[in-house]
Image (cartoon, rainbow, N blue to C red; front, top):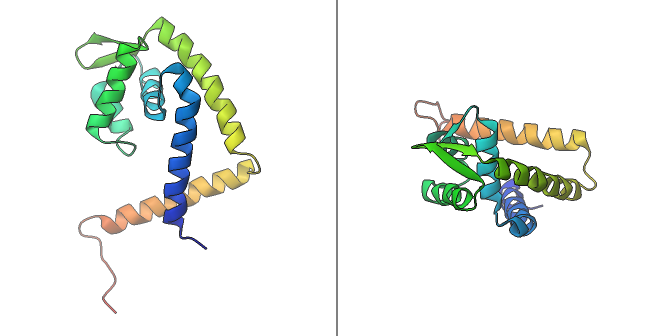
Length: 146
């Protein structure tokens, strides 16, 4: 059996590749779509720092900044002030259509996986992440060498 790291990496790459394919008809990537969701879900306006913070685990600052630029130049969002982002009315409308395509993709990717199995997988990954981050924190006691 391959270790979990193998499957985490392979799953993330497969999901990204497939979602990029689904999103390409809208001129978006998976990361662009995630940026749009952060902007949509932050009220009343998102800030650049909120987007960078929310998606820090997904990409580096330069890549995230490029995705913000993509949604701005694509007319999905506008700046209402320096470092402040809001969806345009057209962007909000188009995002609803994208969300339907993503929902269909998620349904397909979940074929044969029950809601309980999905929740269990997410909970296990959350605990593993917590354990790894706690172990990597300064001042955390580590086991004595064998």
